[in-house]
Image 1 (cartoon, rainbow, N blue to C red):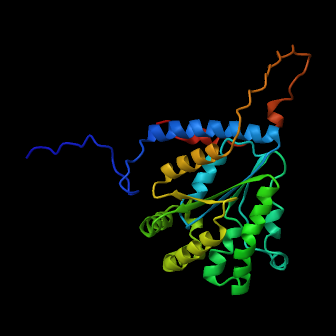
Image 2 (cartoon, one colour):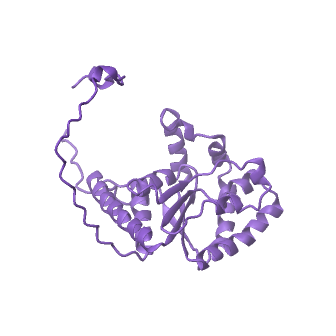
Image 3 (cartoon, helix red, strand yellow):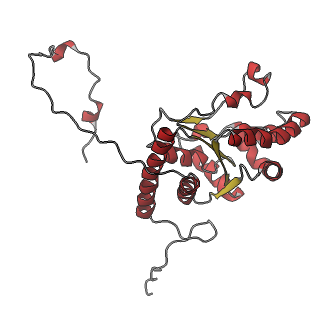
Length: 282
């Protein structure tokens, strides 16, 4: 029986039949975008701009991986990722937006919210963690709050990561046997499977009230995580009117001659055991 010929067509991903990105193409474009993000951050720092980037979306939609790649080479002194835990009793008594205001950027900073004030329109609403009055008040106040931020000069970008129910469940199951990611399977994550339609309705209503011209929502198709990462990074770079700053002239001085310093005996120090020496070389 003749062997089946391999197709010359690129492999198709589940994402609408789009071709799967070759790893080399992905890595090359990722490196290019990350270098541009460094340029963007330098412009923000030197010009005193302020940038807030919100990542929202389904559980297991790929937000964390996208944030990791986006911030990987940025200077952590001027770029912060904010992922807040459940509010404390004191925070529960505050104006809802108050705990988020303290994390907003000052001049020259980037703040990335890994989930944000939109918790109230999503998990809090679906799981009954807020009252209907609190929920309706949020939908009324959120656009006002965001207009105030933009009016004050903050660049606000809002991304919604969209993933299908089939792909979400596949990712949840892959975490079961992965000790590095099993911690991501929280009770709230598992609830998102049985409450899929509730979350869908909540997201739709949230968009109706908060997709405003001053701060629109941008949906990131995330069936293919690699495509999603590249797409959101490229969009962010295109949306920020940064100008590449020429790198400063740096001159590394010559090392001066030794002036009699003698290092103490090595035996006086306590060293970390050489675990790496025990590993097989092949």
